[in-house]
Image (cartoon, rainbow, N blue to C red; front, side):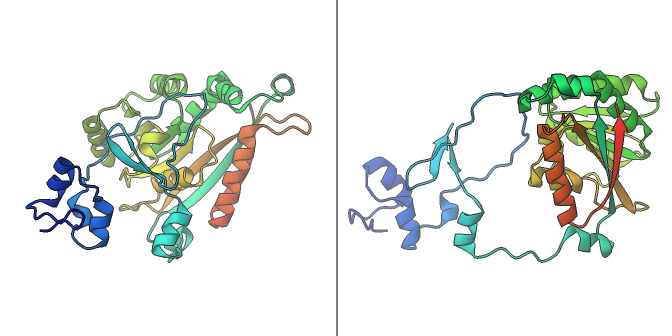
Length: 305
């Protein structure tokens, strides 16, 4: 093969570029048809994704005029919907979750939005708090955590309880639920630190159970997990992420013999005071808007805490 940059005849163009300092780039080789994209790409499987507790600035790295960059030896790329549409054309939605449920391809979804109402003194004292302060208050609230425990234990069928913070919420919920659960009822705790083989073993066990409880972090169990026997999903942590919420709901929509529906218990927290509305209650409004757009059935229940 002749190098189109320096015109030397070489056996391996990739080795030539690396060893001879040739200015020829891989992108140019691909563009002129001398190299396939598959020749320079290596694919691998992500074994686990772990959420960490973090409360600081987040920076988005960008190289001017080129959104590619290397991070710890991995080629990363900032890509959004507009970029994808620019390359592949407009996106077309060929079906909806509601249509698949109507056609019995997915389990019917029943959403119960549980709006926890806090006493006036607490709401007054925490008025104007930041989002992180509000989250810290919620995950450490004993009444709230016991309500989640009782709700989980009352669910009939395999139940998935999803949380955001491992140390300051997930572990607390696991301890509360495991201490009160019937001795014959299996309770599992899964997070980013749980080994992949253990996650798979738990998945297989739950597939054969009819009343197990999985307490898992959103980062691990909101997507990519196939457990069709899940009949109840509980959101213990508030989120306004459309993708994460829909993916999490999907954990319970897969069908299996004898399963016709899935219950979603969406826990919201009303800490508003007079004209001030708290952050996570606004997030609940975003989720309600999403459920309405998707034509899901929703029941609203206010719960004095």
